[in-house]
Each structure stands twice: as C-alpha cells, then as structure tokens.
Length: 396
Image (cartoon, rainbow, N blue to C red; front, top):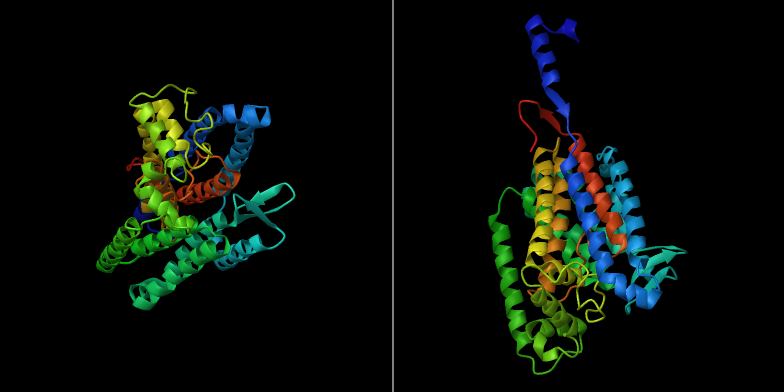
C-alpha cells in the first residue's frame, strides 16, 4: 500500500493504524455476569423452602437455573464472536419461523401450562415461542429500516414497519394467548420506529391520544359494579382496588405489597423472607422483586435497579458507537426490550399497573427467558466487538 501513497501520507496512515484498536465491551459482560449471579442467589433464597417441601431438595430450582445460565452465558460469548451482519441475511426467515413456531402451540407439540397453551416441546426440550418473536421483530425492523432509507419518513413506511410488529403482537395475543408479550413486541416496534424517524411530533401526538383512550377506558372499568368474568378486565379492576379483592384475585398483589412494606430500608436479611413461605404464589417468577425488597430492603432494590441502569447505559454506549446503522438499531432494540421488561415487572409488583405476568430479566426463574436474553446480549457484544476506538479517546 505504501507505494501508492506519498511519504507524508504513509506516516499519517501508520499513525492512524497505531492509534486505533478494536473494542469489546467487557463492562457489559461483567454486568451480565453480576446480574445472573445476583439472580441465582435470590432464586435460591426465594425457592429453597418451597422446593424442599414439593421436591425434597432445596437446590432444585437453583441447580436447574444455574446450569442453564452457565450454558447460556457460554452461548452469549460464542454469539459475540460472530459477525452480527449475518442476522440481516436471515431476518425474513427468522420472522416467518417465529410465526410458525407460535402456531405450533395448537398442535400435539403444544404444552398446556397454567390454563394456557404458550409452550411447545419435544422430549426434554421445551420453550416459549413468543420469546423468539421478540428477537425476530428486532432483527426484521433493523434490516427493513436500513433498506428503506429515507422512505421511513413517509406515512406508508411507518405503517409498513408498525404492521410488521403488529402481526407478531396479534399472533402472540390470539394464537398463544399472551397479551403481555404482544404489548412488549408492539412497544419495541413503536420505539424502534421512533428512534429511526427524524420527526417526533407525530409520535408525541399518537402517545397523547393512546394515553387518553387508555385513561377513559380505565375510568369506565373503575365504575363497573361487579367483577368482570373476563380475566384481563378483572386484572384491571383488581389493580384499581386490590384491598377489596385481597382474599381472592388480589391476593398475590397484596402479599407482594406486604413483602415490600415489611422489608423497609434495609430488609429482613438474605433468606429471611416470610412472604415466600407459600404466601406469594410463584414467588420465583414475576413476583421475585417483592422477595428482593423484603429481604434486602429499599437498599437492595436500588442496587438491583442500579445494575439494570448500568446495563442499559452500556447498551446505549454500544448503540451510539456502532460501526453502522444496522448494528445501532439492533442494540437499540435490545435496549428497548430490557428496559420495557424491567419497568413492567417492577410496576406490576408495586401495583402501578395491572398484573401482566412479565418476568424480571436475568432474575426470574425460566430457561427460555435466560436463553434468549443471553442471545440478545451476544448480539450486543458482537456489535461492540466491531467498534473501532482511537487511543486518544478513552472508552467509557
């Protein structure tokens, strides 16, 4: 190369090469490991008693989740070594495959759990296909936005992208009876379109209209004289007056609030929760944040939320410094997914919104959840690996 450049240009070129290096976000990897470890500790604390009673072994949940977490962490690191641009080539097949997988819940492969068919499995392997849909919608939207270019500014472009997310959301709702995941998918879609669109006015107006309609709907529901037979409407009514239904449908919500109140500032101490002793149903799943508050208090809750905030900060840093638009959108989608699930889970536990059944990332029990979360983290680390930093601009 040197013979095609002048002597001064050669010196400048060599200096640039010397001052540049590839980057890998070890800070993000560290917080992933920290959150996973914290989750395993709290999972053992929340399930030791119930596992001893039901399974005869207090390590049942911990050992299963621990083995899956280690395996998924390795998968995440392997994925981070691959070129994330490969996802652009499989965006459409992945999107279609997620729809097919959701449809399989109504075949002999479907598994009935808690009164709904949301799982598919064969032999020892089973998973929730709606988790695949979250990754699929992030990948397809990132690919389409890059290909569309300035066409995204047109109303037709916005409608097309929102339609892609709406199809996934409707499948989650109607096919797998999983409205909460459908809401998350539609929220991710709207968030990614917002991030990509140069104007914000139309989104502010749309958000105001939707908020107004939701407010009117809640006002109408709150004036209903009797508890609705529809379980989704019932959840809203229980949310509005949990004390009224404390002995029935509001039992889990009230027990969670009791746990938070009992924890106070410093908590009862790790392993000393009383509410986990069969008072809170499924304490290891979407209500585990209440156990954290009871045992570790507000201090522990703030510490956990601080780790999530730092994870989101690292994702934001990667998205802003990604080598191309596709990588930036991918990490932006992952950022939205993590932020939405954390906000929704915590809001449910403290009764700011109706119960949605959304798990707390890296903390709640569940192999499917941790598998696809780690895959998303692998994508984010893969994008970070292709960031080129100047040595005179230190990494944050």
